[in-house]
Amino acid sequence: MSDKRASSAARVSLPIADRREFLSRGTRVAGAIALGTLGGFLAGRYGNAGETRWQIDPDKCVGCSHCSTYCVLDESAVKCVQCFDMCGYCDICTGYLDTNYDDVSTAAENQLCPTAAVVREFIEDKAGQRFYQYTIDEDACIGCGKCVKGCALMNGSLYLQVMHDRCVNCNECAIARVCPTQAYTRVPSDKPYLIKEQAQALYESKIGDASGVDDDPVEKLMRMVTMR
Image (cartoon, rainbow, N blue to C red):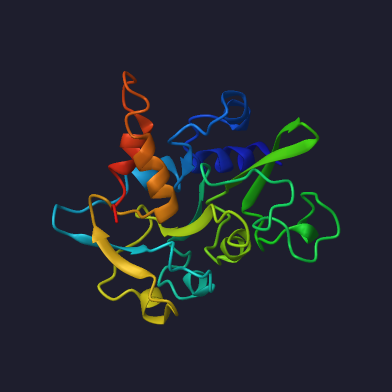
């Protein structure tokens, strides 16, 4: 992997703790979620109070691939995101490996993603099991949803979101018009992202766990998310 690619992948996540910390502490530290680039997630083009923006309900999305082809932009504003707290860090990851893979490796022919946007990194070998962290190279991601469909077979930690440092917030979203499950919805511009209901429950239970810590990452995340 080139230094440029590694750097790009790193920008996609907001890691609070890596897998080694998760295993040693016996719990997944709240706030370890990837929702696009730091700029896209925390400093997108938010509007005034009362305005709304387009977003994808990840619990309705089926990864149909329309997000990659119907967006009015040359490069879709829709990107895959990773919720580390839901991820199993599996060696055999159905969101990473093609169903017809020949070998469990990073070889292009074994990857499910057509642009190699899902980046696999070995974390550790423990009790005979190998653990890997999966992050998203946002520059490479085209929003096709193939990894989302694959990951749904397991933990479902990968899902799609509209990135608001990219989206131009059309009055009538071209993708929303063709979405087969009507997963597109309008959300408040000051909380323009959605997380899965399962992830929301996890984070709600962890709010306040980092008491005494400046800028609690869980509360910081939840301020950007429309609660359901």
